[in-house]
Length: 196
Image (tube, rainbow, N blue to C red; front, side, top):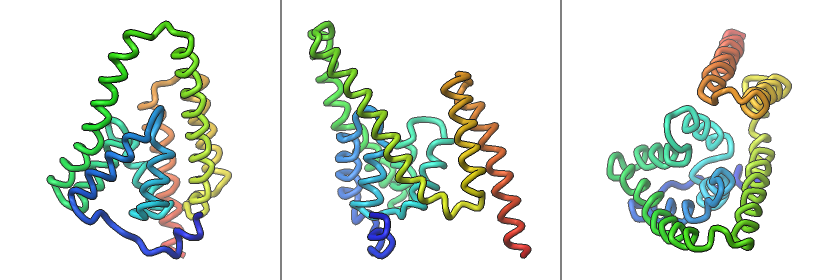
């Protein structure tokens, strides 16, 4: 799939309506985490990004306050259509999902203790975790273009996992700490490359 993206022509949102519909479709598919869906929709189907560009934009969206996909929608909408684009992308992200969530909340209040509902929620959690792992493995190929080595990227990823998942450190401190270290190392490596 990556090779087809490398040769396929890049596109961009055609209109505010295209932006609204694209983010509505994306938001309605993102149960339990939207990273996998966003990568498939924006890179493979829409071709608004290459895999490498998506990873870079997603990294920026992650360090900004707020939900990652909302930050990404704001960035895309603003880049192509300014403030109207931001509003169209946000409306796409929130309108239909808000209606769905309110409807599900009403149903959940009635059937929360039903064994079928409990089992379905556990199953969705496992599926969401699998999607995140699969997308991470798919996007790992873009690390070959990183100024840092695969070993160093893997070490930073492992340290991040240990800090967040095992030590339960707050994500913001881990991002500032390890992210800051990664930025400094990448900056120094890029400086060496430019000087050579």
